[in-house]
Image (cartoon, rainbow, N blue to C red):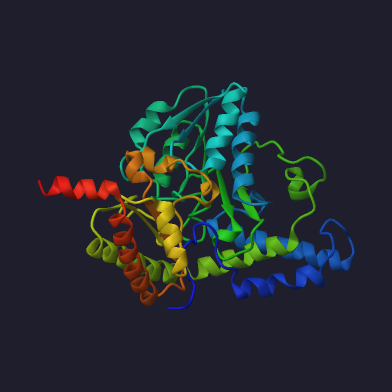
Length: 394
């Protein structure tokens, strides 16, 4: 098989050609600044309004509750820092989990240095937070709960509706990083009692460099970027019109095809999991077996290094990852895998494969065959595996 098999859709996705076609006119023909008053500027403004309508419709929000940003990291930073600043008179306690994306964890670490107190919730072996522990962690000075919708590494989907109910019952604001979930699972911010939600365009076959933050209409949130009056005076700077158009188009397509795509992805995801477990020994599926993103497969392969596995797969035209793309340069094992209780030596052998709606079973069969051969070859060079076999034969 000479084609590239791309299985790293949690890192980024291929831009949908239909999305690109909608974006194109706003690079060249409708180039006006949306804040201006002449006709070509009004075309840009109309395009932004349509994109806002499409995004809000995808999550059951009001148009005016959507604020465009440059991506998920900015949205997370704005949500957490903005709430911390806006509600500091009430308290300085924030609750999060140990398996959040670093856009959340590093923001919380920054706030700790500013005098805020952060509670980092444990997760179980599948990566789920304990709702009882969450509720017991709430104090009179708790101002924010920020728990991701679905984990970017192991794919586990959190009980978001139940978390939202707990937050509402205790009058605490609830933010969720939905960068991996948006466009892949149903989201209704009202039904789930979500007050703020972060998402990004390039995870749903939209463009890079654009995302949004949903902010419930009654939530106080300080401006994150100061300057002009864009985004209702909360996020200054000339709007990225082509990017926003692309985000809106991608959101529309993703949610129109959500049911069909989800069924297809789950079938392929479970097929890949089953084939790996049947053909390769000493593997561990990371994340909840069923409460997981439709496209996420994450395994640890004992006695080998994940980096060697990735390089070998790349030589066969297979693109995957060992965890978050944002930490790919780190030699440390994934904080997510350590949080679910894996020892360092096993966590180092992780492989994340994230499928798309264009991934085929033929491709997955090829991946499993190559994976089996590569794992066998790498293990045969491993002294750890040799020692393990000797102990097994005693």
